[in-house]
Image 1: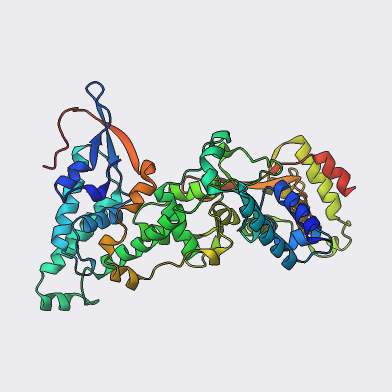
Image 2: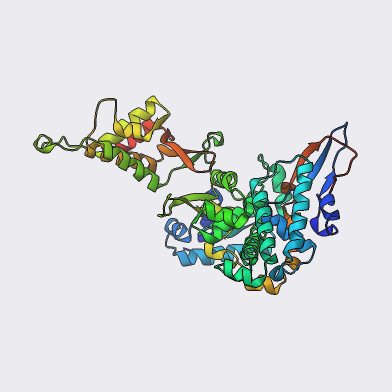
Length: 281
Length: 210
């Protein structure tokens, strides 16, 4: 592993970021000390050259930054867009620094040092980097320390990229279904059939015995053409919550590529449904 | 009940629990015992473990108490563990630190601090149950808010969020002269995660700096 602090200033530093680890055949695998992003790279350059962050020699930094990008390009590495954006920002700041102060003051409503925002971001990033180092240095569960195991907890398969749904999302799903639900139309609705949560729990258990996974909204809407009333939907919803509390089912949603939950909320059979049936009987 | 009897029960409860247990909950199980007595007993147990040179102690994590092995025994325990030891990349740690200190926080705010896309990292943290979705910010676009989980406190051995080390002030960073501040410490802490191997065509030509 390259130790960035042990390397001489650029351009030598750039070259030494790469060190051969194998040289089998004509192709050579090299190791790239990957920066965590443009801010990380800038902090590295500042540290290496012992620059004063509050009075950043922007022209020097910008040149070294571009040298690094050129090198990555020569290696045919895909440059993340963020790196290019930062290059543009540096070029912009550099050009602003070249403007005579009076012309700058006129054109610039913010006034002040064009470097200020970048410096503030660098310092902010440095704060969290230090915090991350402090977190990473703690004895971590599963790395340095291990807990008494207790009874094994069965985890859902991770491959399915599922997360447990928050109550907020559940309520949103309920609202969606209620919005589409049959609204009581006047006098015909006066004599409602008595609905109990217990009864709905039995129906949910029935459904879970037929299928291991059910979509929440499908269950709330009931079978095709049944058009349940609002009170039935609410009772079913409460029954689902009750069964989740009894650990008969777990409520899940998939994780999309953006890291946000997406797609339908699903219920997964967790415990033994017949045991739950006995419990509520 | 004699302290010794209470402590026996507490030990058994902590040994059999897979999650941290609060003093209040332990107190309800052990006959005639208050949460305060539980905490005193736990302290006494830890003192006796240390005096006898035992391989574990009771830690205060995530608002509860948990029996854990000592850090210096990690390399032995790891050999017995069927799963590879937990790995945290520097990118994940940074993202997690931002969430921990700024929560609830949006993805855009995280990305602004780190200057890079946070999507894959956030997904990883959600999957590992270190972060959770804490609702939406009520602004146009209703961005998702992220926060840490009790699991985060457990993994990082924190009693609570107030147990997080104080974030350094910008002024303090400047006093320290930022460039000298961290001496490449981060590069040794997470060295393996920061490296990727890639292939280039020419074996002999050193990388060109033009």
